Amino acid sequence: MPREIGGDRFGRALRDLRVSVTDRCNFRCPYCMPKEEFGDGYRFVPAAGQLTDAETVRLAGLFADLGVRKLRITGGEPLLRRGLPALIAALAPLRARGIDDIALTTNGFLLERHAPALAGAGLDRVTVSLDSLDPHVFEHLNGLDRPLEPVLRGIDAALAAGLEPIKINVVVLRGVNDGGLLDLVERFRGTGIAVRFIEYMDVGNRNGWSADQVVPSRRIVETIDAVHPLEPAEPAYAGEVARRYRYADGAGEIGFISSVSEPFCGDCTRARLSVDGTLYTCLFAWKGVALLPLLRAGAGDAEIARAVRDTWERRDDRYSEDRKRVQAFIDGKRRGGDGRPAVAARAKVEMSEVEMAKVEMHRVGG
Ligand code: SAM
Ligand code: SF4
Ligand code: SF4
Image (cartoon, rainbow, N blue to C red):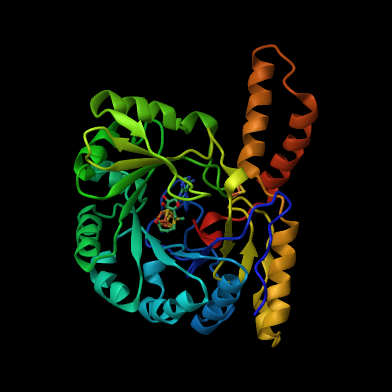
């Protein structure tokens, strides 16, 4: 068995693998897959170019040997993958190789139907994306006027199936759903379900992101704290993405994923495997390492593990921290200062390269 990877160029271990099991989606959220861009003419990965279940399990096993402990199944919308419970069932035995958590991120629209089989197959827990409890805002934010009710029933079904702890992901867009955040807080406080507010990110190059659409997490903390006093909670584990807070009255927890205002690249232990078998070492990566050709050329485990190890050991991604440095430079200019030219000039080149060529999130997996 290959030994675990020591760390990347900044000493970050490889601990989490996000596996995108499809690049298709039944939603067209404007911040992720805007319908104008992902319409009829969009070329999704053809079936022959997608990792099979057996290939996915083989790669996930090699990643486990190299240090991965958590698997997150994502997409696109992972519940569109045919036979997903069978894939989960085939991944579950990787616990013997060190995997201690198998989670799924879903928009929840088909969850009611699938929750029992997923739980039966060995899935530990789900995270459901739900940006608003206002049916009109929800319909707007999924791009296709899909109704809200099936998602709420999906969450109930996940609870009933024991896919806990359940988390709710809320992407916050200024002027779109930021007026309804307290509704989400009220609905899930005291239920054991943790809501996590995510700053809108400049993922991909098709969502028309601009910094003024981002609501900084600290503003949301202040708004909630004024109604339900909050206390910071200690990170549950190294590399935890969300900053967590407890309700002072004991009604549970909420979290904030603040990759724009408070980047956390220093602790980032996540790799991503897209459905076409490409390994990416950053959500914002503009290039990856194609593992599928290796697999299909008959490479042995040692050769594939070496490709993964080499990729991770060369890794120096810290896109969100670079973005913040660039923003600080721009702000400094606006205030009449000269910012920090050496750092910002270098980061800016990286940013523009990324803007030109980075891949879409639905292929990388969220
Ligand atoms: N379709 C599934 C879902 O929506 O949960 C899984 C894939 S989705 C890409 C994974 C997560 O990324 C979701 O919680 C989604 O809200 C989040 N996401 C997508 N685009 C984003 C963006 N531009 N900024 C912040 N979060 C984003
Ligand atoms: Fe689909 Fe999830 Fe992206 Fe929305 S966030 S378009 S549900 S993949
Ligand atoms: Fe990790 Fe890249 Fe996100 Fe930084 S920007 S936290 S390196 S995925």
